[in-house]
Image (cartoon, rainbow, N blue to C red; front, side, top):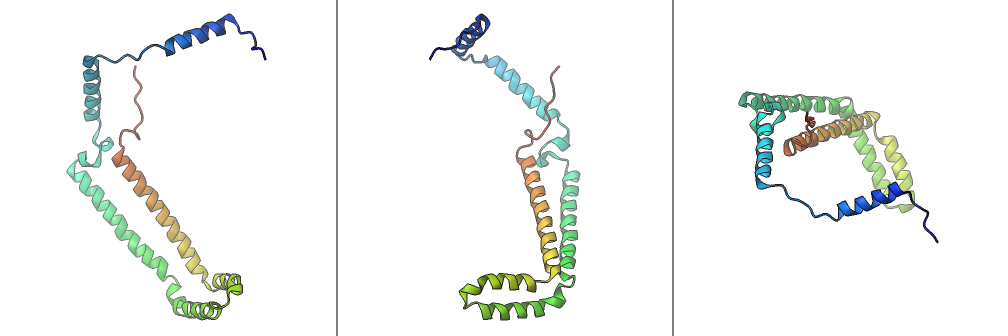
Length: 166
């Protein structure tokens, strides 16, 4: 099998690429390294407080942040309590009693396990399903927010937009 003929430009590009790849790596002088590290530290110090880690925020802002987080939790707990009390308390005793009677009757018979799943699906009140879906959605959003906040606190520089140099 023969190789197709190459143009002189492609051959030159390949030779230059190989020659450049074979060159040893060069290290920056220590004075340049120190200057770059000083510049990085200076830029980090010049950032506004809201782009720094939480520990570098002003005390009043940190207290406000903690207060608002506690307020959000204080609002979420009654909301959760309200969601669970919407028509669920009235159905709780009757539904659980029916559920346990059905489970007790079907536990010994393994061929009727698909029937058990269908019976359980019919016995669970819709309000429980809606409440469960709403609670799962709220918990998912809360988990995402907590993970995003933790990532922002742990890796503040990776989430900041890069400034273009002139």
